[in-house]
Amino acid sequence: MNARLPLTGVLRLGRPSDIWFKPALSVVVAVAPPNLTLLALGRLDLAMYTMAGSLCALYAHSRPYAARARALAWVLLGMVTGLGVALVAASLTGSAVVLVTVGALLAAVQKALCDATRIGLPGHVILTFISSAALFAPQTLAQVPGHLALALAAGAWAWLVCMAPGLLRPHGPERRATAHALLAAAAYVESRNAHAGRAEASRSAQAGGTEASRGAHAGRTEESRSAHSDLTPESRTAHTAVQAAWHTLLSGGARSETRRALERLVVRAEIALAAPADTDPARLRAWARALRGNGPVPKAPYDDELLGVDVELALPAHPWWRALGPLAPIAVRTALGCALAGYASLALGVGRPYWALVTAASLYQANITLTWSRGVQRVVGNLVGVLVFAAVVPLAHLGAAALVLCCLAFNFGAEALIARNYWLGSICVTPMALLITEFAGYQEPGRLITERLVDTLVGAVVGFLAAVAVTNRRAGDRVERALAAVEGARERTARLLAEPRPAPGALDHARRVLAAALVDLRAGVEAASGEWWQRALPQERVVHAERNGHRTLAATVRHHRAEGADA
View 1 (tube, rainbow, N blue to C red):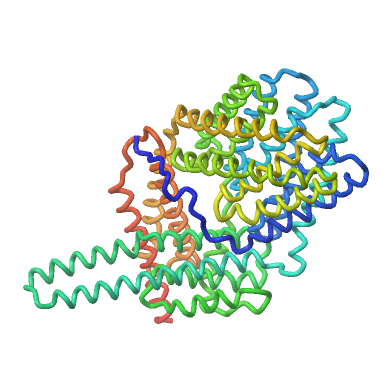
View 2 (cartoon, rainbow, N blue to C red; view 1 turned 30 degrees about the horizontal axis):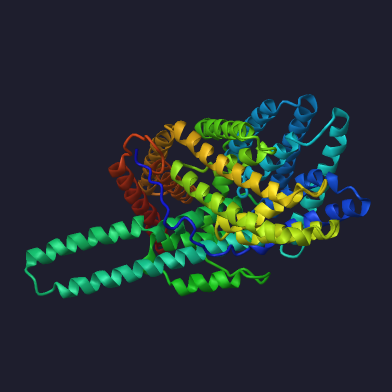
């Protein structure tokens, strides 16, 4: 066992997302018209079905608008499919055990598909919340088409809400991703230069020593400098930001002149990572600031480096379903944990076992350590959330309009706060979920609070125990595959460097493939390091592969500059 279960830092608040207000406002605009329409018609009991479509507005806000349109369409299809399965199951059987089983299997499928397609936050949790709640809604087969139609109509409105900002700022997501890459590269360059300054001061302090001690110290300093430049958190953060920027730009559809200009800036960020001593971080930050709004994109040189992008776009894309195999242990964890949590809730006589099911589903992350942290955050957020519900329920019970407005406020609060820490967002999610149950009629608050607390604790404890019981041995396999990918990409890049005249764009494409492989290796190592019962990771081989990979990246930059000087 090599995973640790931390308590310190689990509840620490992070920085808010740069666009925290976008999903927060989008979900309010997506939810309000359907709910207010149902309120005017006196049919708030149907709000669960419109909420299914409206909550699709939470997804894909970081994607370019062409990619966002496709992603939101798939999310809506997945939402309606899960809702349809749940409603049909609810209409065919009243067995709570069967319904919990169906909900657990749906949660596992939703988790696997969301992870495989990398749909991003909020992931499968919203899909599971809707489908699990629908399992326990009174239903007949004749009602299912109408309820699905409500979800589709609200989902179409949510799609329009999320696409509307593109009319004012068509390249907003790409500009933000590029700015993040530039700022991360600038932070790395500053960190690297500061480290070099400390190393120089240390060498000066040792200048009076013997020649042998100076040589040994210089060797240690050089090794330390190399380790700092290749393996620091700032370096990893910057490489991840650069790869995220490339992913955003390459998924954005047609390559307009604006997008090409952004690609040139990302190339500048890549070069800064490979040659920090020759980079001015102030210039990177100035470029990042210039990307705010809709002003002209700063011009960067070396258009020929974009030939590598043309090579990359010409290659066939990897199908997402290839990622399903490695996700099998996580899917099994989700199915088992959700089922056992639901059964335990039923055994305790709780009237809404889907709350325990959804709590368990929300826990599962890339490894046991992160799952533990999410469990702590979920429990703390829900405990505080029920206190907020107790304080707000007298206001919500003033009338149906007050109930709807309170739900809208909590929708906004949840999305505004959850980026800082999951538990903070849960403080708003919990009362919102409790108030939604009252759309069909007011209920006794004390009973709602008690059942929610019980289901939260049951779901968290049982869900985590299921995660411990189902080991993820494939996490180590992922590291081996990632190592092989890095080593293969480095060898291909080195061969191109040795050629007198590589094919146009081939070296730049190879550089990007190697950088992406290094990012994937680091993610795989971090995921495997947080797992239980893992075989020992090849740490020495990982460090060797990362250092050699980053040095090869630097060599590609020197090669390109040498070619430019010769020209």
